[in-house]
Length: 126
Image 1: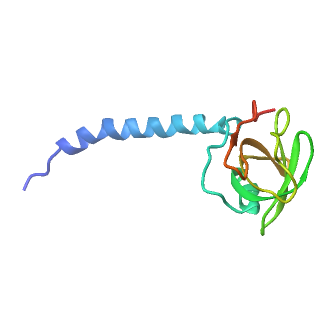
Image 2 (image 1 turned 90 degrees about the vertical axis):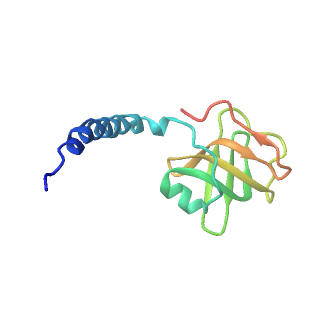
């Protein structure tokens, strides 16, 4: 029985293309930290801080003009925004925030208030 040499000849370009895509994806991910985090299912605050970004749902613990502290059963963290927080954020209110972890806190890219309204700060990068 004679072995076919066609398969290795056809597989070489496919493998080369896959290898090139793998190399290119590495350089694309290098700047990923500069992009906004996409909303996902809420996760515990501690997990989002450890994985450097995501979506959390919790309770507002404290509020300032450009920051708030949110907490859940796992942890508590400060959340900052570019500009001012939207109206209606008060201590004790439920809130959902999507953003990236930075310097032990979060930088918000999206905020969903208890009434379901969505707010997107002007930018989430410094």
